[in-house]
Image (cartoon, rainbow, N blue to C red; front, side, top):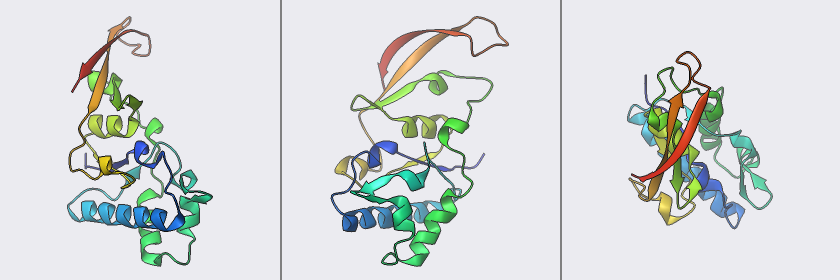
Length: 170
């Protein structure tokens, strides 16, 4: 399986203060995506929800950015290309041989980090908006993994699980 990109949803939780900053974030994201694809990463960006619904500044969404005549047309088209027909993260199912990483929660500063979780267990690349200095790193520290110990009640029914949560730092 080839490597794809997964958007870190924590990097867009807090919108930019203005449209100009939001435009810069998306421009930098496009450059990051393009650089990754030039290094062999598949031209696919997986997200937890529709990218177009993400608010990136007050009253300014990615859908607005995609139609913003003040943004370079090639930049807008590139984002459209990498997000077209891409399944959302929740549509990607764990493999049949479910392992601990697939059943774990990833936390960053005590917040769920599903983008990092999916990137880890799918062996993909997590990408972020440069919305704060935490995401301007080659390696993101302080991610903890909350492992779930599961007892499978019936081998053919992996959905029937009993869990005991064990917090482990990674």
